[in-house]
Length: 277
Image 1: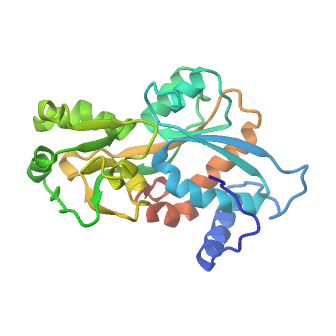
Image 2: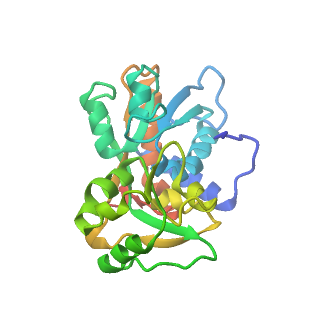
C-alpha cells in the first residue's frame, strides 16, 4: 500500500497536526527544511514496522513526507516469531532497513543481537489487547476476568495474533485462566495476516489482537479491551538499524513519530502516546 501522495490535499485537521508537528520538531532542533526541498536534499528512509503501530504510522508518514520531501519506503512484519516475513527473520537473513518499529521487548532483543543500534530506542506508543466479533453476531461480555474466561470457554473458534499479543495469550493468559487445555483445537494462532480479516470472513468467531490493529476493521464489532487485571500493555518502540545507510534521517523520522504533536493521531488509533506520559 502506498504511504505517500504529495498531491492529495490535506484536511483541516491534518493541516493543524502537520503545523503542530513541524513546530514541535523545530523546537527539538530538527531541520525539517521546506515542504518541497530539492532532490539533493531528499532522503529515502527504509522502515520495517509491525502491525501494532501501523494505524498511526500510516497517517503520520504522509505528513512527514509532505513536510520534508523525504521518501519513506515501508515494509511490514510481525514483531516476533520465525515466520519468513517476521521482522526478526527478515533481519536475520540480512535485509537492510533504516528504522525498525515493533514491540519493545522484541526491539530490545534485536538490540542485544546487534541488529539495532544501542541507545537508539524511542518509545512511540503503548497498546492494549482487545477483542472483536463480526457485526450482527452476539457481543460477548469480557468486562471482568470471569466473563472473559466464560467467553473463551463458550466460543467455538478463536483467532489470535502470532505476534506479541498472541504470545501473551497462549503462554500466560490462557494458563492463568485455567483454560489452556480447552483452547487446544479451537484457538488458532494467525501468521502473516491480521486477526480482523480472519474474523471478518467467518473463519473465527472471536479474535484477539492489539486494539490498534482491530479498530481499522469497521465491518467488525469491537467488543473492548481485556480487563485491567489481565491486560498486557506493550510499548511499540522505534530504533535505528545497524547498517542504516542514513542514520541521521532515520533518527529524524523517529523523533517526528514520537513528537507530542502526534499524540492526537496516535490516540485516535486506540493507543496511548508515549509522549503523553
